[in-house]
Image (tube, rainbow, N blue to C red; front, side, top):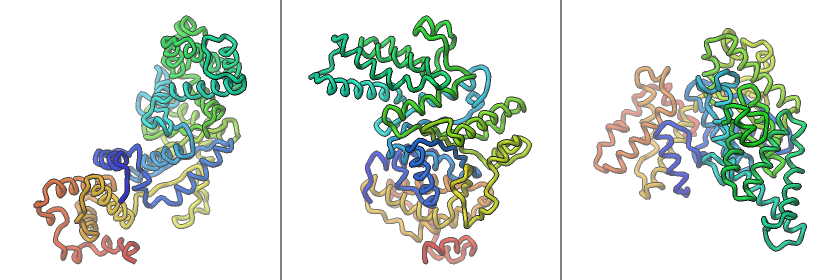
Length: 437
C-alpha cells in the first residue's frame, strides 16, 4: 500500500487515541460515498457564491466528527479556508461573560488552509494576500522590486488593498474590519510587529474593552458576545475576495447547547442557529459552508432540542418521502448511522495495510482473523448498546501493535481459534455477506 508517512502516522496515532485524523482521511473513508458526493456538490455551489448550512445528526460513534474532518480535507483540495470548534459550557453561539466571543476566538485560532492545516493561519492568509497585491502593483507599474521606502509604491498598494476591503463596508462591522486590515498592512510595511500583533488581537476577538482598542488601533468597536457572528460573515466574504473559494466552519458537540439548563439562554442559542439558517438560504452571506454535528436528541427533542423551537422544527424536519434506502442528502439535515459490519471489516483491512506500510513489514493478519475479531467484539456483553466502531478500531490497532512488536504472542488470544468463526452468532456472521459476495 502506498501512503505518505505523515498520513499513516496521523491515522494510526489519532485513531489509537480516539480522535479524528487531521490528514489522510481519504485512505480510511468507507461507507460514506453518497455523503461525500453531496459534500463535493455543496462545496462547488459555495465556490460559485452561495452559502449552505448542514446538520450531521447521529448517535454517539456514528461518525459525525469524522465527516467534518473529511469535509476539512475536501475543502482544502478546493482552496477553501477552514475552521472548526467544539461547543462547550464556555463556548456557545449566544451567551454573556464572553462565552459567545470565546467560540469566535476558537474559530480564529483554528483557522487553517491547505498550506497551514494545523491552524493559526490568519497571519499567513493576510501576509500572502499583501504579497500578492504588491506583486500586482509591481507588474502594473513596471517596477523591479518591492519598494517600501517609496511612498508612491506604498500608496499604490494601500489603494489596491482599500479597493478590496471597501467592498465589505456595506456589511455590519465591515468598516472597522477594513480599518484593522489597513493597520495590519501599515505594520507590515514598517516592520512594526507590535502594530501587527494588535491588529491580529482585534481580529481574533481578544480585546476586552473598546477603550483599549481605541487607544491601540483607533477603532471604536470590538468583537464581542453580541456581534461576533457579523465578523464570521465578513470573514467569509473577505477570504473569497482575496482568492479563496470561501470559508468552511465546522461546529461539533452541539449536544452542549442541548444541555444548557437555562431555557431562555438555550432558546437564544437556537435563535442564532435560525439566523444562520435564514442567512445562508436567503443569500445574505456569500461563500460560507457551515456544519453542525449533533445527536438525535439535540435535533428532535421537543422539550430541549432544536425541535423545541417551532421555526427551526419547520425548517429542519426530514423530507417525508425519504426512506433508509432512498435518501435526500440535499436537505439541511443528514442523518448518519454507524458503519455496517461489512464496512467496518473494509476499514480494518485498510488499517491493517496502513499499519504494515507505516512500520515497513509484510502483514500476516488474514481477512478471516479480522472477521473473527469483529464477531468477538460484537458478541461481548453490552456490545449492542455501548460498542462503537471507534472502540473496535482502537482495540484492533492495539492488537496490531502487540503482534508487530511481539511476533511470538499467541494470536488466538486476539482472534480466537479458526473453528470458532463457525459457532458464533449467525446474525452477526451474516453481516459479512456483502463483502464475501
